[in-house]
Image 1 (cartoon, rainbow, N blue to C red):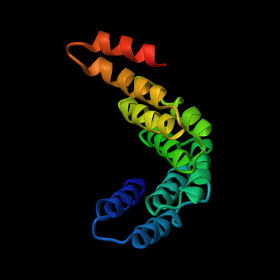
Image 2 (tube, rainbow, N blue to C red):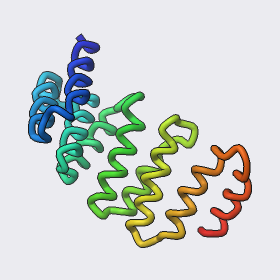
Image 3 (cartoon, rainbow, N blue to C red):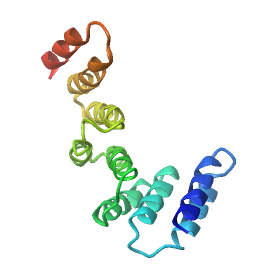
Length: 157
């Protein structure tokens, strides 16, 4: 049952290029309605649907509810990143940074969190800190010059 529901959710997300934003949201909401009101995964999908449709103000509290309801991986870190991005879009930069800082540096999605952190810092009027965040995330991936890039990043912030 659980996997069948997840497969149906993924099917909706796979078809976004064929559907309008309203159709995506309606399809996600129909699937969410099949689950209990406090189901963490369903809350996450409801938030994601609203986020996708540009309804960030509706998405943010649903992301928080999903996390408070005990959302597990592989969705927990995605929810943190998506919430951080949503809060940035809502111009709540301090909250965005706080959420994004909650992503474990060792998680495979940590570079995405770093990217959204850099975007948040830039939008908050802190371009040097944004560049430092981006360079700090990039430095470990450089086979050469990583140390130099990391040092320059520290000088910016």
